[in-house]
Each structure stands twice: as C-alpha cells, then as structure tokens.
Image 1 (cartoon, one colour):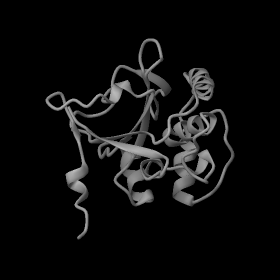
Image 2 (cartoon, rainbow, N blue to C red):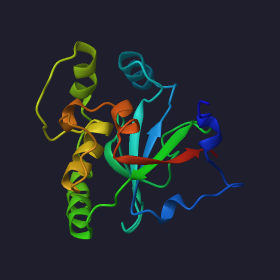
Image 3 (cartoon, helix red, strand yellow):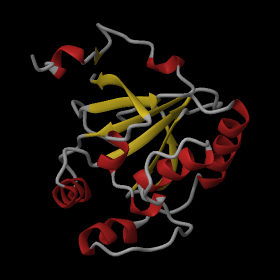
Image 4 (tube, rainbow, N blue to C red):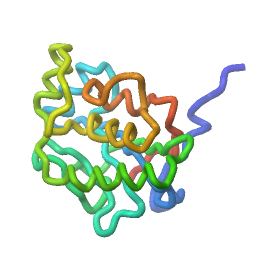
Amino acid sequence: MPVNNHNLYHVLTNDNPMNWYEYPIVFGCYKGKSLFPSRLIRWFSWSDYSHVAGYLRDRKGKQIIESWPYGGVQAVDGWLTNHKAGTHIDLFTFMLQPQPDRLAAASKWMEAQLGKKYDWKGVFRFIIRAGGELDEDWFCSELWSQFAVLAGEPLSYKPAYKMMPVDVAVSARLLYLGEYRV
C-alpha cells in the first residue's frame, strides 16, 4: 500500500507550533509566485521552489539570512520579511547536525557574506544552463549550499553555484520539518 505523504506533513503555524527554532540551522525553501525572479526561477527549474533562506539559532540579532534580489545578502526579522503573507515555506534541517566547530566556522563565514550583492548572473545561468565559478555575489540557494559545504554537510554532489532552490529542497541530507504558514 503506498504511503500518503500528506499524512506525514506538519503544518507549522501559530496554532500548531513545532519547535523549528530549536534546531541550530533551518533551511526555508519558498514557494513564491509573485515577483518576476520567482516566476522565472520556478519556470526554469520546473519546480515549485523559487527561493532559499536560512535560520541560524546561535546568531545574535536577526537570525534569518537570505540573498534577495533587492538588497543582496541580508539578515531579516522573520521568514516572511520581503515576502508576501501566505507564501508557503517548507522548512528543513540537517539529517545529521554538523560538528559544532564546523558549524561555527560556517556561521562565521556567513556573517562575512552579509552586505554582498545578489547574484543576478546566477539566475541567468539557470536560463542558459551555463556554468560559472563562485564569485563575491550570491544567489539564494548558492549561498546556503556553500554554507552547507563549509559546515561539512554538502547538500549535493553539485557545486554550490549550480544549486537551484529545488536542489536544496530535495537534498537527501535534509530532514523535512514541515510547512511554515502565517
């Protein structure tokens, strides 16, 4: 008898909280539909996912970091900052949590990325299916994939600059926590 995956899902809302914030790192994979880049990414990746952000529990101040087309790499107040209310966000954490020293080093690296530009070339690489090396600009899934590599838990065999939001969401190294809605 096939498993009905819908019975396995947790819906994370204010009425049904799951303690996602207790994990040291949480990846948020967004199913955004509104902005031009979101639609473009969804269309070219043939998936529901258009964006990736991450939560760092031990970070002081704003704990969610994302690379956003309008502002680059930034720390924000919450999952829906810069996003429309009602956007569905699937939350994941590492299946095996990274070693504390590796996680600390990756978190320190992430801090150094704050303020860097959004990688528009990364979006266009998806369109033309071209490669490219890591540079000082970051596309959302590229940023968090590189974080995972530095934490010692790479999400894929692909290099970070080739990672699309869907690649993060389907990584066998991540554990699905549930869907976040407000």
